[in-house]
Length: 251
Image 1 (spheres, rainbow, N blue to C red):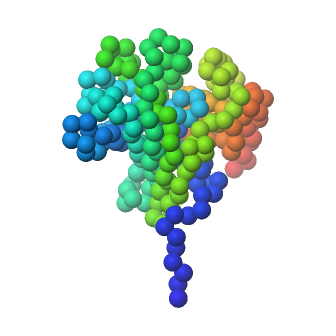
Image 2 (tube, rainbow, N blue to C red):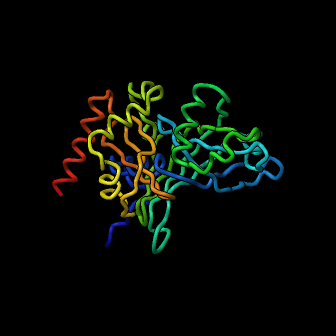
């Protein structure tokens, strides 16, 4: 008799890395809130950014229905994971729960978030400074990963966030860290993107960096490069990318 496959698999490091990559590399997602007038779930598509600790960032208007719902009840869930060709259910996706918090306008926290978000979404510069738009951060709960047919995992909040003493320094000096990593090879962005993305091009740019990876952008495409573990200092960060480049060149 064939043994029945468990619906939820034991969570391993491969599943954790996939979940982190999906969340931190998402350009957009489906945001679900609770409509205060009807009590029914309300889902909408929204742009997604990533804070330096991996928490999702939203730029939303106070006039939007989903924002009004969040002001009444800040609980939400966010679905990320972009399907490509073929059956969309065969591609991995992640759902996370959380509570939305407004990011204070003009604060240092907003300055860091704004820089990162606008590099990921350059077109949002057109409205990011409008009075009714404000950045919001999702304070994460746990998540649920569907890695494809028969590959379901529970993902803990602690497995989704970046834990590194380097985070606060990158917040103050992100462009410096980007320049230090970029100096490893003048073609760094293209080498990494063509090794880890399905989009083959030679116009990739560095869009953001944190203690556990970086984002590369090309037009409407974004690819997340996830390190095996979070770097705790600049030396460790550089060493991680040197190793990655060496492996790419050898192959």
